[in-house]
Length: 466
Image (tube, rainbow, N blue to C red; front, side, top):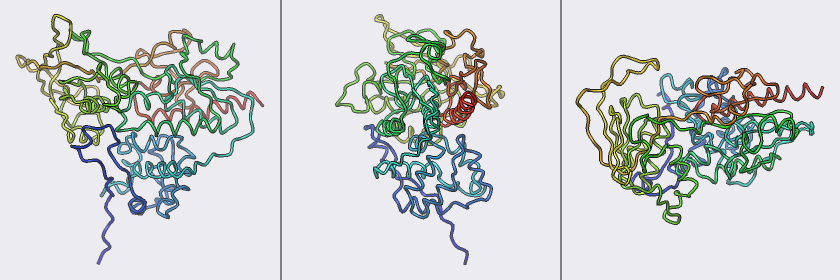
């Protein structure tokens, strides 16, 4: 009789009716026994495609083999050889589109739950208090400035500090983390996780300068010429929100998702009602968009007591958000009005939002993205009653630094042009990565670019020494 295959292990989570009214993390994580059972599913391929599918090149079979043996701390240390932020990546990275997608098991079965195991070992190490500080190479005397304290810069800093270079991160806001701190809700990425990852880098020797706007307090050129930095890594992100360009978007009660989520995190909405958040607490909320940021905004508004509807101009199967995030939103009670598109926002005599006119859509021929293009249905307009509109249709790169560096080459989308093999700009010693290069993308892609940049910066600095 053939041995029955071990199925992919589910991760226990809060019941939808409970979590829809609190900001606590939704999944509970694996137990020791479940993690070992899931790890036993790994086939230990001789040519593991999962490693190639990981933007930072984690030795996935290596750390999973240690989990299977019950060597959880060793697994965490193996993971952190390549990934400076494993507890973050285990929670917010789209593994189903990367390492898990190319897992051999996925051909006929479900892939190994790489992301869940990554989260498990990172949490195990943090909770154990046994944080291993790697050996730091002898100091080189070279100094590197990182602009922005998001995942790309944190990766660069983690790599370069271990190679003996002095690293300082400059951040415009008052806490490090970038999108990890200000853009992702507590129920998806608890702040304690981000703080722990940042504190780890501080223990390695990375310096953080907060409330410092590069491009205003000083330019990149001044950091190098006046402040003595030998190289600069620009990772100022994509904090400029996109809007629909329809009438009424300037009314009171219309937010970009970027502003809404930042307000929520700054005002500690995740501690509601201990911290009240009247500027963003509303009754009838519509979120426009179908990506992960739209799901984050909708689920945040729901937890603040709102009746929440997502309006998206395409069909469900075309939504760019992760299936897990869309599923969680549906479970919690977020409503979906698919194949609908806003045409104007309606206000009252005090210029406050009271409604939104939409038009129904149907799918036509594929557009440049390969998805069927939504086409308006003539005469199908209708009005929704609401008091808040959150626009979650994307962000554009922050233009401040390119504006202060006329010699920096940028694209028509405002992103910085780099050599993808080094993440170097055409200015010697100046590198860039993350959303300022790729446009709004994933945490792990930003980290992958940070890893490439760190390697190139090191070679550049070593070349100067020799």
